[in-house]
Structures are given as structure tokens and as C-alpha cells.
Image (cartoon, rainbow, N blue to C red):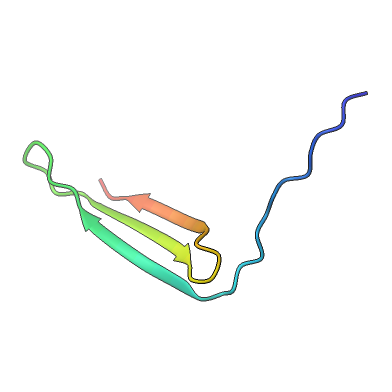
Length: 50
């Protein structure tokens, strides 16, 4: 029987840093957002607007 390694899930501090960037490409200006944990620098979420 195979055993799978446990996922490495960091303990987040609850304090997040939000970054936003406009990506100009072919006449469109979509926004890219990232939420990063302040202490661990772990990427919590990201979103690219349409």
C-alpha cells in the first residue's frame, strides 16, 4: 500500500499584505491581485481580472 506525504501547510499569521498590478497587454488593462501572509510570505490568494 502506498503512503502519501502529508501536505505542507504553513501556519498563517492572519496579517496579509495585498499587492495589485496592472498588466497592459494588447490594448487591455487587466488587474492582478495577490494576498501574501505578512510573516510567512506564503501566497494566500491571487486573482486576475478579465
